[in-house]
Length: 71
Image 1 (tube, rainbow, N blue to C red):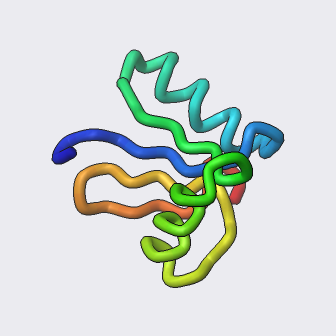
Image 2 (cartoon, helix red, strand yellow):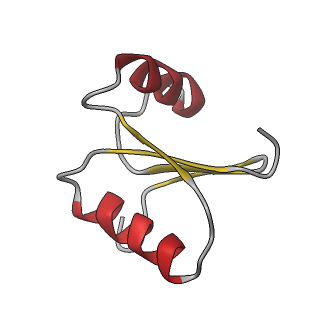
């Protein structure tokens, strides 16, 4: 999905919530994967991050960002 923004996170993570709000505020479409409920997405996130479990993980084009805002 070139050009798509992917957010891997948890519903109860304040940084994940803020990342989703910010993309929505800017009207930037994204795909959200709750890694607590989706084991396959969790496995993909671990592969992307090299094993880091810190969320959110934001994949935008070829760029990978771990954390959002104050993290």
